[in-house]
Length: 84
Length: 107
Image (cartoon, rainbow over all chains, first blue to last red; front, side):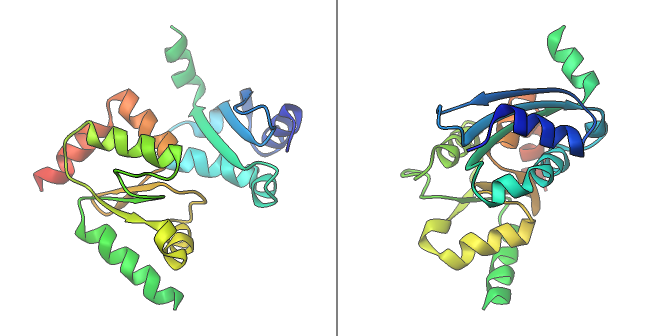
């Protein structure tokens, strides 16, 4: 298992994130849904955006501290549009 | 032989307009993510081919190497990797999936 803080810190080290929201889907600390807003996602396709996140969390995914990861990734512009 | 598996995968991806690598079968999916992916694809009414990775450990590992993507399900449209359950869901919600499917079947 992994804590929300560890997820946030790991992502912040790898990407210029403006928002990270985590949700523990099962309460077990290893099935997570994460919403990430990053300027690094600008102009990139979803596959590429998710690859960037998977890469950043590679170690935790590899040693099974994260067993399942559901992602929602947005550029700041896309995120703003969602809110309006 | 791993290279054989990769070329088998490549053939299926290229010979099917929509190819889904999943856990289980469309009628009996063995994982919630695979089930949801089938549900989305079925909602458009276009045919799609599937392969059950649980039936073949070599394909289960091979498909991850093929796309350099760590998880299953994996969806391919018109020979191109589109994503897993999350991405398909997102494309579905944004209304971007239908044009992709229509374009693939218009060819």
